[in-house]
Length: 241
Image 1 (cartoon, helix red, strand yellow):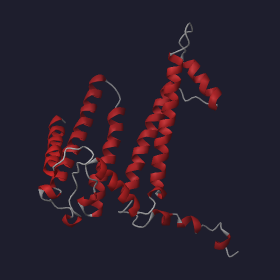
Image 2: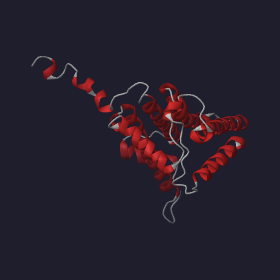
Image 3: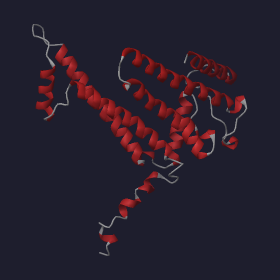
């Protein structure tokens, strides 16, 4: 982990020095031009991006393996490395799997702040309205749902653990009663963490799905995908009325 992380960081700063700027907003380590396909590119024409991608992947995977080792030593479940594995999946989907399926490393995103935002914008407009991507809809919904669920949980814990002066700290029974009165059901103290875990990994999973189907599977604008809805035999125009 230390080797890959250190080497990758040094290469990013070296690339920035070759560009003549250390402004973190303007540093841009771009992938190779599409003309290079899946081949190796010269160092300053995308080769640096390829090496940094290898370093990043190596650092992430080795860190996940370290988490597995720690879990084994402590006799814990593997929930943390499993969840981190989904974050790794999202990254390698963007910079390895999707470029492989599209035939060029140039389809990966650049390493930089403004350059990355430009890539997100350009990729979105390439499919007209990216928010019409059904997997993107699911991912965004799950991200917001995760935030809502864990914010409610965190607020409840703080409320129970910080009573007014002179009152006793509340117990999980109080927490369960609050949610039963509030929404009619309480998933429980362990259940909310399982729910948050499930929501979070699904949010990341569908994030990976939404980008890997854009290009390799669906090449048109995403609004066109919804034409199947208009072709359902429930509309008067489809049944001859």
